[in-house]
Amino acid sequence: MARKQASHGTPATAALAAAGVPFVAHPYSHDPAAASYGLEAAEVLGIDPSRVFKTLMVDVDGRLAVGVVPVSGNLDLKAMAAALGGKKAAMADPATAERRTGYVLGGISPLGQRRPSPTVVDESALELETILVSGGRRGLDLELSPAALIKLTGARTARIGTGKS
Image 1: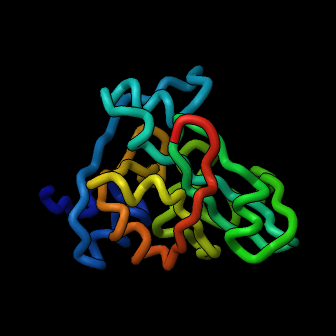
Image 2: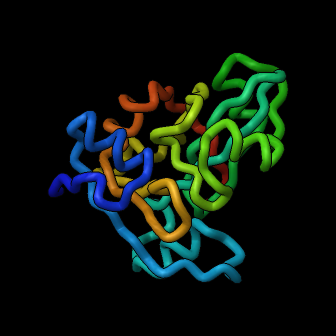
């Protein structure tokens, strides 16, 4: 996988470039009418949805955290809370997620966030050579190794996805 410089100009690509992490940028033409940003990316890019991961901001016992799960499934809130030693998790308010990360919904990347939060990556990522995550804007996904994502975000892994993961 060739390393790309931060030519797409997002904090996520800048973070990867600064860390010297190999990645491939996958820009695509985003359709504002798309019902699911992640499934749209998988379809437009011709990539199996189990390799495309969505970034979700959650509130775990009053603290913000990030869950990264395949777009082919959903986030198990109970498993997410347990992975962080919490009792209860709920989806974070969208405006709060945008303020915390510095990204807009549909473009929230687990990388290069304005204020990083504890992160949990679904363990299904470990079965894959590379995965795709949002690049920090709608219409840009970044392909990298799960190990690199985990290292850069300080994430832990757990079975937090439901459905086809």
